[in-house]
Image (cartoon, rainbow, N blue to C red):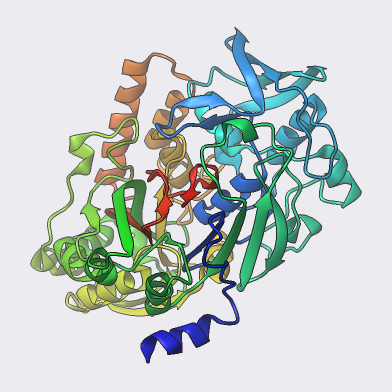
Length: 525
C-alpha cells in the first residue's frame, strides 16, 4: 500500500526512464535549484546544478586537485598578475565560440554588487584580454588562494547575456526575475532542456562538449526532482523511481543499507552547521526585550552555548551522522586546529547563572529562523534547540521555512537568530572567516555575516591572511582568528555533517566532501 501511495504522490513530478535505459540519471534531494544565473546565489545545490552547464577556468578532480577546464595553462607574471591560456575550439551551447572576451566579461559580472560570489572575487581587481585565447587576472594584493577560488567562478557568454538583457547578476535577495534565472547557455557537459520550478529540471548531454572523449561517466540525461518529504524520497529510491538520493534521512539509513538493491556511501562533508545571532541592532527584533539586544552580551551567547546538549542532537536527531565541533571550519579545511575544535561544555546550570548575571533571571523570548529543506534534519535540529533553551528559561519561537524563502529573508538581515550551514569549496579557512565573521565591507568582507558581528582585532587577522604567502605565518593568523572567534562566541558551531549518499546498486559515483554530485563522473549500468 505504501509503495502505491508513494508512486501516486510522485507521478506528477517524476519521469521514470525505461527499465533498460542506462544513461538517464534520476536524482533528488529535499530542495529545488534556486537559480541558473551562475553569479547570483552562492549555495551548494545551486552550484552543483550550474556546474553541469557552466564551466570555470580551473576545476577539481576527484581528489580535489586543481586541473584545467576552460584554461589549459596558467602562470604568474608578477605577484599581482596571473596569465591564463584558454582552451581553443570551445563553443557555448548556442554555438557561439568561447573567447577571452567571455572570461573578462564573466569576471566583471561576478564583481558586480548584485553577485553573491564576492567571497571568490575578493582580491580580483579585474581581467584583461591579451588576445582571443589569453587573459590576465589582476589582483589588488598577492592572493595565496586565488587558484582555489576560481573553480567557483563560472564563465558566461557575453553575447548571450547582452542579447537577453542579463549583463548583471540577478538579485536573488530581492527575488528579482530575469532570463538567466530559468535559462542557461554554458560550455559544460550538459545543457538545460527544461525547467519546472519545484517540480522537475531536465539536463541533456552536450554533444559538442570539448571534454567528451575523456568523460568518465555514461550519463546522457539528468532528471532532477526536489522531494521535500523524507519518506517519499526513501520510498522512491527503494521502488526504483529514483536512481540517487543526495540526502537520505538518517532515520532510514539502516533500512536502506539492508536492502540488496541499494548501496549507501558516506564521508565527512567540509560543512559546519552553526547558529548565528543579531549582534548589531540595539533592540532585538522578534523578541519580548524592548530597548536592548541581549545577544550583544557575551554572557548571553555563552549561556545559549552551554544550554546545548550536542551529544543528544548527534544521537537522537542526526542518528550518528554528525561530528560535533566547536570550530567554524571542518577538520579538512586548511587552518583547522584541535584547539578551535573544543566546544563549551553542556552545562544548563552555568547557562542559567550567565543569564542571571546578564540581567535575565527569567530568560526572554526570541524567534529562531530555520530552513526545513536544506541541511540534514535541519528543522529537527532547531526543534531540539528550542526544547534545550526552554530548560534554562528561554522562550523560543521556531520559524521554519523552505530554503527558497529562507535565504532571501536572512540575507536581508531580517532575523534575530538563525541556523546556517557553511561549506568551504576553497578548502581554506579564509573563505569562512572572511564571509561569516569579518565586519561587513567590500570585496567579500562579511558577505554572509548575517548577525553583523564586528571585532577590529579579528578583522586585522583576516585582512592579513588575505595576502600572506608564507604558509606557516598564514596558518598562525588563521589559528589566532579561530580562537578569537570562539572566545567571543561570534557564532555557535554545532557539528560537521557526515554525508551519506544513497543510490541504486547500478549507480557508481565518487563521494565528494563538498556534497556535490558530479554528473560527468556518474555511471548508470
